[in-house]
Image (cartoon, rainbow, N blue to C red; front, side, top):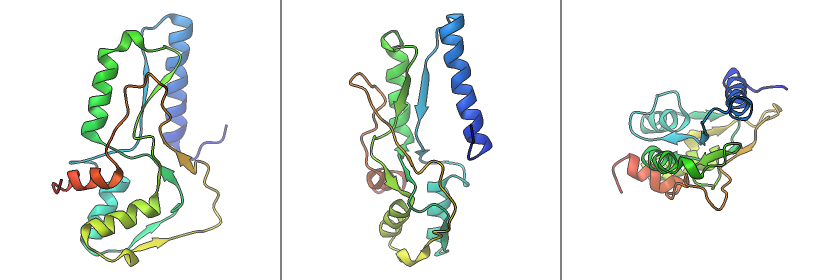
Length: 167
């Protein structure tokens, strides 16, 4: 299998190792797939924090994959979803991965433009680099079952406003 990054490879391998341990060793564990959390004290190199910091300084941001769609979840809602999962672990189906996210994808370009609007800066600060590189993972967002406990309810805009203390 071709992996986009070392992070993607190790995430996949870790998930598979836990699934194997659940199936073959009887390990009482579950897997939660947390989608792109953001909030106060997020590492500066993560997308939301990186973009907000640059846009606040009126610096250009260049998006290598502007059409990439991701699911963003504000950290307090993700923590709440994980808490619900832990408290209801007996009802999880061990072979499934529980999703934590909104279930709503947003392109990186639209997310960056939304941040410009919220900050009151020009969206011309957002540069899209539509090169010929193939995006191996163009669309990733949470898909929920009827019994999912990890659904975050705030939209990207609502989460950014809460993060900035304006909502």
